[in-house]
Length: 166
Image (cartoon, rainbow, N blue to C red; front, top):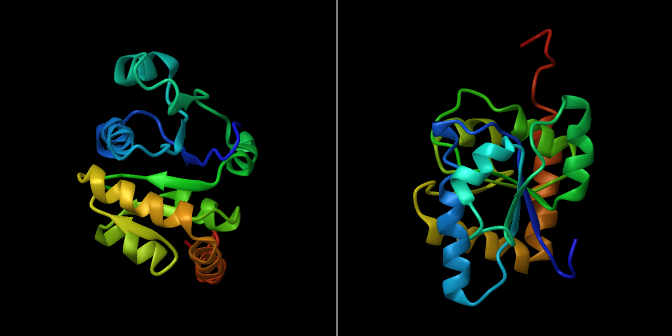
């Protein structure tokens, strides 16, 4: 990790509905603003990374490749936030995982995400790179916002049923 680096984790394969292509536009927006971009840590296949990002985004985006569930906690530990720019979900374990791992959540301002996360996430239009960059800047610039999101996430995760009840 370089000095001052902010890491955003996305645990996902490269599915169209995950909208990972928007990351290129978010990085480009940070470049336009003259500000350091978050470093996006992905779990997509290296071949998918190469086709999606190529050489132009190596400084701001990396992949560790697919990981076993047992390895996920260490990835969360290495990152500062969970980022999910998805266009469609019915439920993502990433939300609960991030809350349990005490990581703030940045995700799509869509009904399914709001139902799961309520006030424990920062929301954005998943097709608007400028708005996504704004949410990242808010989080990177405010320790109190991060603290508030973590507190809300800690309360919210307690409301989830366990796997047997679900």
